[in-house]
Image 1 (cartoon, rainbow, N blue to C red):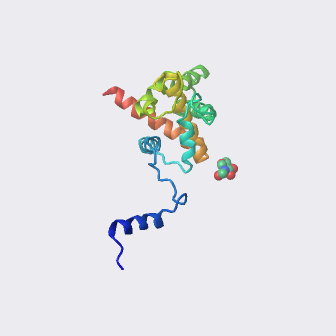
Image 2 (tube, rainbow, N blue to C red):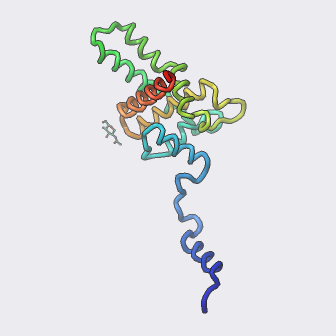
Image 3 (cartoon, rainbow, N blue to C red):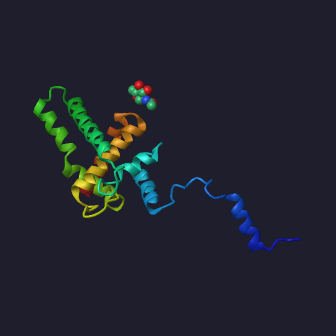
Length: 175
Ligand SMILES: *[C@@H]1O[C@H](CO)[C@@H](O)[C@H](O)[C@H]1NC(C)=O
């Protein structure tokens, strides 16, 4: 006996997707879709996407947030800027290197890069926190850079992402 097509299709779906066994696709929620877009904009694909989720989560939203990653992201950004200053001029003074490091990794610079990257539309916040406030955007961007460092087990990889974002932001600002 032939099974009526709709029932047949329904049976197939049940067989193909037994409850709980199918892995969640990357674009299973708007947040996951936003994270996928973010990765392509940054030019880095996470081995452990949970790190990016955490980076894009503000402390107001969850205890599983990006604050610790942001500490690393800030250090990696400053390190990348200090290295570039000394690589360009090995006789640079301490104050010049310090200034370059703090400027490149400043809240103003990182909020601009984070806003350009679209972080206000991605980062999860709760309560009175604003997703477009400079400290939130900057914290999330630093957390993203720290997340790359952890994911790649390399502050060099984080430094590369840091410079790429600086260049993209500067290019747009100059247009
Ligand atoms: C991370 O990098 C360090 C230093 O290069 C290395 O010793 C360590 O084994 C790496 N860890 C993993 C998990 O790859």
